[in-house]
Length: 291
Length: 133
Image (cartoon, rainbow over all chains, first blue to last red; front, side, top):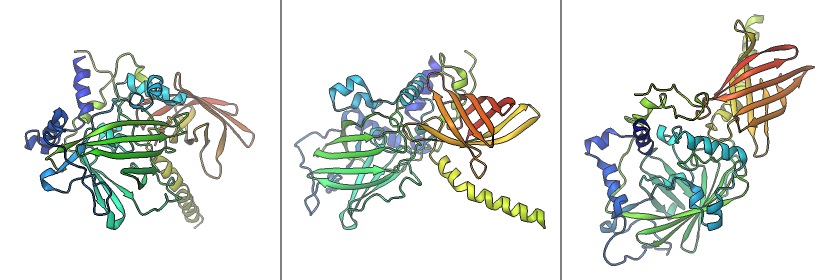
């Protein structure tokens, strides 16, 4: 049991980088400040900043009010569905996708690609605890989203009205191809062309390369972003579903370097993790002798 | 000279087949468990082995695919996954030879998962193991 708990701690914190050690906790520690309730700034409400063209600024304009966005960990999207009835019913799985999700739950998510520092696209990029920020470049008609942790990746959202390229599914990618537009004060991001390299959520929900994702980001006030995502993936689900949650602004902090691959100690243990009660032949590695 | 020409043809044939195979591999393997390119061998005994490649796809409704993709491919007439016990059943026919492949997925959680089981090709019966690339 102790071993499983230790391994779970690796699963939720896939890498302990040398930078973290040098900073005595460094960015991870800083992020924990945000997680620990520091996300909501005290004092008078600050209005949502706007760009010269009137669209909401999803980042900061005044250096005294800098910060970044950080979501809580959303483990299982079935429970994050907007529709209360759907929340009760769970995700509308195809049978194989349900069975695979159950297997991943039984094996305690030990095979989650994110613990191998692989990128997490789609809603997963927004439900992992790592900080991220939007950089709006209206003159270039694109928005860049930078993610700090796990894969230190970036997403380009084209705002120039272009369609998805016809060949987008020929070479699918981790984050897919994103185009965006504004609906009032909501940034709507339409993404297709995902590869099948990551799990939809931490619990092991599945997606396929047929996934069509519509994400909606609304900065409801300076310290809060409402997020909704509609997942339409006929490869794994019988109908589309919509999930959503609020994301907190973590004031005073900035994105820093983070290298997940460095000193990723989970890899030292992975091959030896065998979960009791699950057919050993379905799992990787060898059973560990009991201590 | 004939040998060199044959080698050149083989190299060119491999280059022609490689891009679609690589494109499949790039799907990264966390979706439908059967989707991808699988390589390994089958044989009637330990000393008589034959290299095989299996390619499978999932369109949201059915598994499709073929054995040894290329000019001599054997398309599967039946490709089924039993997700209750992760067993696989494949059937195909080419040039009067019927193929019946029954196996079970091993190491399901890994992108390098395998299928292990029995292989019937015409009147020959043996075993096989293929691993997802």
